[in-house]
Length: 362
Image (cartoon, rainbow, N blue to C red; front, side):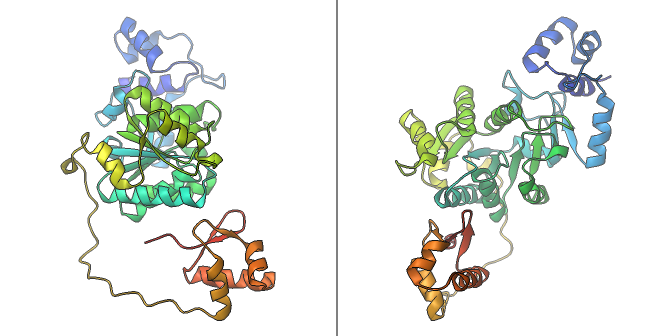
């Protein structure tokens, strides 16, 4: 057994983390020797440890297992006393050491939160920052989409084994991240389901990978505040986007700002905070796809009378379909058909809760 294999074996055990392992290594002299001397070689399920199977599964799934014994293990994690004993990486493992910003927030984001997540992530990715998040629904997913829209890189850190991907709704997004040169990462062995223990660990890793963390919409009690707390303890820059004072979704961000987090409103604000830590010459700016020519002024869209009635009522926050029916006086079936036609033309977008909103600004 070599050091890499020993790290993976310890990662499969029930109660050994990096802090405990450091004590074992101090006595035994190496990770491999510590494993040979360790008496409780039992997994969380009570079974024996089969570390060879982990490597076989990794090969089958096209996953790279990175341990602290590997040169590509990110230094920003290694400097933390509590760091993952193994990282299961689908995609480019080298991206884990790139200059990164974490963008985190609620799964139940409003239209405002989704737009800010996308815009800030896109702006940062355009300037060479890798976007890190938890690949959850809401703010996390939208920040990843913003990075991809800029042809930038993203790192999705999930709270389950890579073969037990969660949430299922974002599986295609994870594939897009990998296809675009990013990575999807887990510190959990194959077969690990998400639970109340895995998500706080995932949040710790998200914070550790980044130079700073941006919170965009978070209730007072949320995983987002766990991530920002971890970031503060690590000396990372904690930032928050303000929201409405009467919005439950923004209560956590407003509390962070009150308690000293940097107030940011755009990617430029985030860069102003982080650029002293990572000069622009150390960041890889995405290459433009060929030469561009100045765009001609877009022609004003033409609407039918009924479409114009819909567009007059729709805003960026989203309007419920029932309200559109009441305000336009049109039948429900007609409003549904008009909204679908406008969506196909790119004039509106649909939000959860049967709401219709204006498209995102270019």
